[in-house]
Length: 303
Ligand code: SAM
Image 1 (tube, helix red, strand yellow):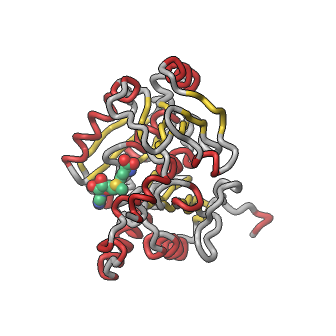
Image 2 (cartoon, helix red, strand yellow):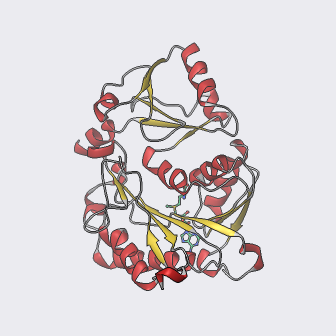
């Protein structure tokens, strides 16, 4: 089927968990197991040539390896030991771009099952504070297992509605970075893309967009927040550029950050500072990422 053909085009991405190992150690381990390392990808077509036990390093993201889409690591030692995380390339963008400083205070607003939380913790070298919220208790328990296996210790998990987290609470007064990956239509997920999701009814999209905008506006209320990364696995502008546009209009103290100049797919219309991802242009699931930053205080000369 067409869907299966699309899914076959997406390679298997493997993120190295730098809290437990290093990129070089994982490459060496795999080579000893008979995998053949081909260096860093230089163009999209290199990914299409992967087969059998060959693998590459990613061009844009450090600590990300790429295998043929048929490679399965779910039973592999490195996966079970938390040395590698099985995560699509596009979904590695938000934490990588937010790039919180070691020792900083960070919120992951809609965190379960925790792939991006574990990525944030790795970037923070497990130092500082990582507050992770999710509404869904079942997804949170999966998340605890994942974070334990990955050796994350700097986090505090809460079964809580992010919209009800008080930005004025002294607990969050040092939070400078927020990752917001809220519920979305999922229309970018290649395996989920069937007739039902193609014809998303407008009411559902509108409800999701309203929720996403509430979350984004809420994130900007934290008094010390400097950067907020917003992402969805949706292909609909309604959940992406339109949410960002409405938020910027309502929060003139924030602006967009121009992300990865060499990334091949940009946000639609006026939103070229943002990134999109797709099977056709990036060999990933469909994805959107925007980063908002607080404008620097105006100096006297600018007044
Ligand atoms: N960031 C996660 C990761 O990388 O593994 C995936 C997050 S998923 C796209 C969205 C999550 O938001 C779901 O787990 C859902 O339970 C949670 N969620 C929905 N509404 C929420 C709310 N008001 N507050 C906190 N979490 C919420």
